[in-house]
Image 1 (cartoon, one colour):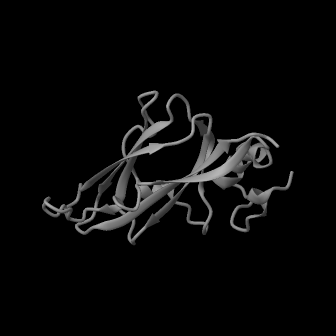
Image 2 (cartoon, rainbow, N blue to C red; image 1 turned 120 degrees about the vertical axis):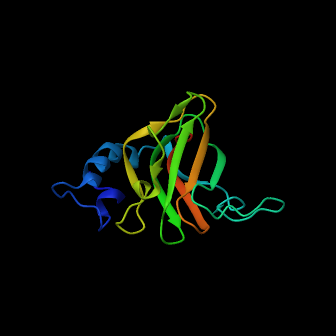
Length: 165
């Protein structure tokens, strides 16, 4: 089956390439009328400056500056990948917790470049879709690893359930 994932020039069925296997898992969903794509950014534009001073609080321009953000994703959706946007260089840790299941997606906070895809403007596909259950509430946390502030944003690529027409 030919779909938009297989037409992407930066994603081919090459030996040793992870995207080919992830695409095989997701290709059945590409034309499924029960799902539509949606993007969820974390954190929002008001809190994406990691390590900058906030009014009444001393500047946190030290490694370890912390941002926590609550994210709601429609229950029944499938998280299929991530985009990473940051001021260069990318140097922060990320943890994503499913609050309905009290489950951390990663065993420990991971470097943000694990969420990036070096193949252009294409999401970093997860090996299997992550189902959103319960309330759909997540906690997004990140820690600065630089001595200076960073503007950061992780965008979750999600297939959201919809009414098939």
